[in-house]
Image 1 (spheres, rainbow, N blue to C red):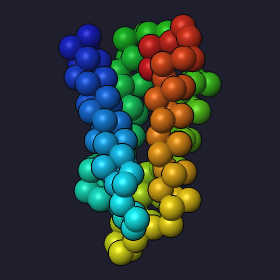
Image 2 (image 1 turned 90 degrees about the vertical axis):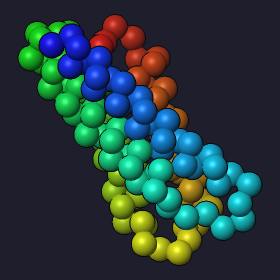
Image 3 (image 1 turned 90 degrees about the horizontal axis):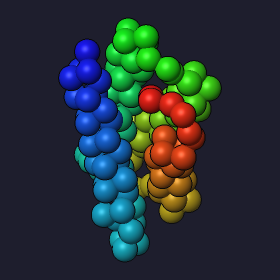
Image 4 (image 1 turned 30 degrees about the vertical axis):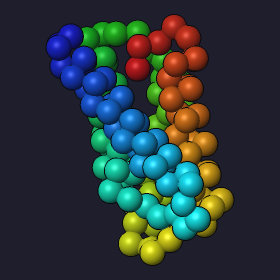
Length: 118
């Protein structure tokens, strides 16, 4: 089970790297859009996060459900916004910035909310 936990954690981190990387790659562009890295990253981070919590529950790990709920809500909002704007030729600067802030906030919750594994 520990190996499975590490695999899902690895995929969760890669998902956030792709999502934030896809956002930051457009930082200097005047016109922003949802790209493949954002789509795949948001989906991977969300699904791998859910799987990670499931594995931790199965291991009888110390899961902070409040932290998981906050991360899941932020992740779901990001995923819905990304998917809803996927086929649009461009997105507003405010939406792009909001997606970036929410994505970084989700990582910050993971890192700074103490005494949890998920």
